[in-house]
Image (cartoon, rainbow, N blue to C red; front, side, top):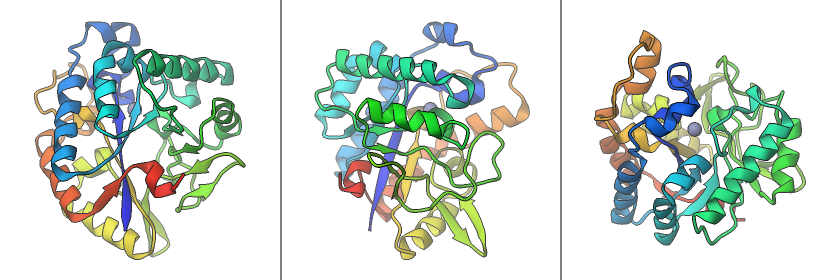
Length: 275
Ligand SMILES: [Zn+2]
C-alpha cells in the first residue's frame, strides 16, 4: 500500500509553538537552517528513491528560491503552506486570501514550474470555524486538494472530532486527505508525524501505520526539516511543555525517518490521491 510522505517546509523559528517568544518581525534575525536540513532530507529521499510532497512556506521561498527549485528538480511535488504561517483560526477570510496569494506569488518568483494543487494549513487550522470560507478560497486559486484536517477531538488548538478518516471529496473541486489517525476500540489515536513521531517510540508509529494500512487506508505522514536538526539554536524563556514539544528526540528523528521509509512504501500526496 502506498502512503503519502509530506514535509512542511518551514524553519525552526516559524513554528506556532515558539510564536510567543519569536515574533514574525524577528524571523530575519534568526539563523536560516532550512537549506541544509531540507537538503539532508532530499539526499535521503534520493538514496531511497522516494518522492514526497513539500508544502512550502512562501516566506522561505522568498529567502531560499534555489532550495525550492532543487526540491522540484529532484522530482518532488510542491504544495503550499501559506506565506507567513498564519493560523486560519487567528485571521480573517480576507487575510487568508491575501496570504495565500502572496505564497503563490513567492513560489512563482522562486521559479517553481508546476502549478501547486495541494495545501496544508499551518498547525492544522482547517477546523469547523474556518473551513467554510477557507475551502472556497482554495478553490478560487485552483487548488485540488487540502491535507489539513486532523480528525480528532482532544487537541485544544485543532481537529474536527467526527471528520472522515479516509480521503474524501470535501467540496466539488477539492479532496481532503485528512491527517491519519488509528481508530481502535472506538477511539482515535494520532501518530502520523511531527511531535507524535518524536515523542512516542518508533514502534508506536509503526504499529499504528501497519494497522491503518491493514484497514485499507493510506497514511499521510508529515515532518518538518527542523525536526532532524539537534544543533538548532535553543530558545530561552520557553515553558517546560514548549521545550519538550520542540526539542525532544531531535537527535533520533533522522534515523527514525530512515527506518520508516524502509518499513513502508511512500510517494507524493498527489499520487496517492491519483489526481
Ligand atoms: Zn507549519
